[in-house]
Amino acid sequence: MTPPNPILKKLGLADSDRAVIFHADDVANFQSSLDAYRELLDVGLLSSASIMVPCSWFPAAAELCRTNAGHPNLDIGIHLTLTSEWGGYRWGPVTSRETGSGLIDSDGCFHSSSAAVQQFADLTAVQSELRAQIERALAAGIDATHIDSHMFALFHPRLVDVYIDLALEYGLPPFLLRRSVPEFHKYSVSPEAEAALLQRVPQWEERGLPLFDDATMMPLDNARDRTALLMDKLHELKPGLSCLILHPTKDTPELREAVPEHDWPCRVADYQTFKDTAVRDAVQKLGIHIIGYRWLRDLMPGRGDHK
Image (cartoon, rainbow, N blue to C red; front, side, top):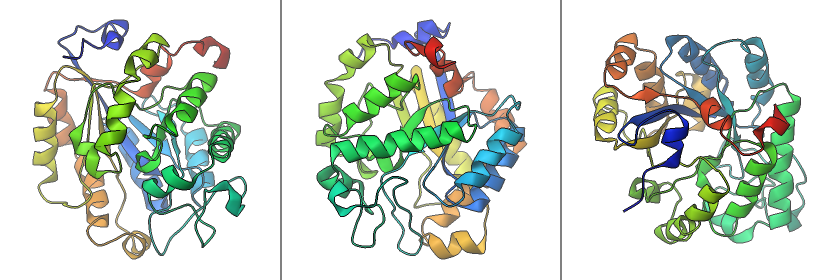
């Protein structure tokens, strides 16, 4: 049995408490993701989000962050991106597009799958690209609260050390799990890779990294009964630190054209669910402690060097 998460005590919580981050992925992949995020800031249930630096709407996302810098709910991380998964809308590295880097496919864009990145990417090129994405976000005036990994591409024994080293260097908590989450096996995290990563958990905790006990994602293949599903997921969460991941986006022609038919309605449903103040009020009555990554950033070792 995994011992209680030491981060709970540092947050002033008991081992029996449930702390949850409501996190919006993929901000800046579409203009409509920016509009959705801007609205959800004011609703007050969403407690974190992360931005895709290589995507075309990143400059507008950075402007949104600067304009709303004083907003109490603004909590933005960097969605470290090494994949480009859709056929008709692609993006690639912000550094070099040299084929020798192993970062790109025959179209000069990021690989479409995490498995391809994990197999072909040169580690030096990965480090250079991810550092460039972080530096670009910081230079754009974004007060980054964390880093995470698009399509969990970095959740692999060959790549995870680059992820950890950058987290410690910049004082930004990485999204990482201290327990098995079988749900993520269908999201590019193989059971074998997960098992190898879990062996490193004691080392990561010794280095002071705040890790999650659990995580779940609003599905991207079924948009029905979204509110009921959300409440079921929250009732099922065990004590500890958890993350609930969603992809809120407004319904636009751009979204429908670029994203598969099974996927885009789910993103729209996430936006509609989380903008409902009745849903917010129902969640707040569950006795869950809603936090953001900013709380975890304050616990990072050496954080004072980056304030």
